[in-house]
Amino acid sequence: MENTVVTQQVKKKKTRHFEDFRKHKTYYFMLIPMVVYFILFCYLPMPGLYFAFVDFDYIKLLRSPFVGFRNFHFLFQGGMDSVIWKLTKNTILYNLAFIGLGNLCQISVAVILKEIKRKYFVKVTQTMMLMPFFVSMVIVGVIVYNVFNYKYGIVNNLLTTVGLPKYDFYQNPGAWPIIIVLINIWKGLGYGTIIYMAAILGIDESIYEAAYIDGASNWKRIWHITLPLLKPTAIMLVLLALGGILKGQFDLFYQIIGNNGMLLNATDIIDTYVYRSLAVDFNMGRGSAAGLYQSLFGFILILSVNKIVNKSFKNVRL
Image 1 (cartoon, rainbow, N blue to C red):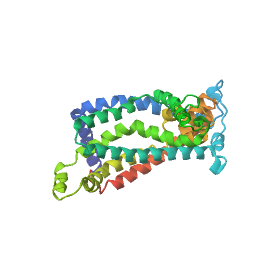
Image 2: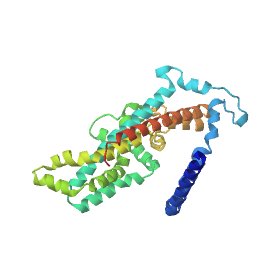
Image 3: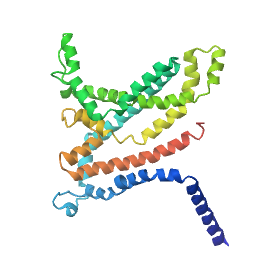
Image 4: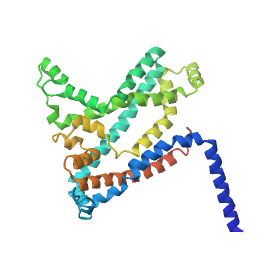
């Protein structure tokens, strides 16, 4: 009897799945490129994790000598002064700055644009802010170099014009965390603002009208209506971003900093270290070990963030 019930339940599930596929087959076919992408670039390369445990030899390839955790020992030796600690610290701190300051700027600009009544000005401003999002990081790197170059950079030309000495940005790492964060905010401001603008435009206008009739000023309407109703969107975007906090933006750091050893202490992240290990130092073992560490740490973060998201949105009405 129990087997019959289980069989019937399985048949019902299969029928429901088939009906769902037939009803939404267009959406399922649209998923094919994504599935192919993950198979080619995420699952097929997974056997390469084996190289994290060998002293890779480009001649012997798969016959490279097995060394166990020696590559990991190199990354973790030294405790707080270890290579992996510096890389993890830089990656996390940069991403926290990107997420926190980025979302703060995007929310602020979206609220300001909402309060501007000239629609033509708002549209032009949105378009201009969105343009950097589509600019290649290669071009951004060239622009940054021409701005901060010691000999003929714009900043140093301005300093000499006002009688101040030149500052060699590419020999002093202190200024680059600020520069990198500002560039990231500038590049993503338009895209993030559009998301928050869409959320603001979805707020019922009658709420603002009621507050206006009650004598609420623009600031009070923003503080007591707009920002509280933006909270679910902001929480969702921040939590989703936290899932990838250990994955740095390789193109941003590499195109701006490159392989400048003078700046690596303040700007080196896991992604750039993996690239440098493979393409510059030709040490596939250490690069694979760092990549495996990043993947495992990121996997744990994603699971943790998923639990936080589920708990956070139990009592939040989207």
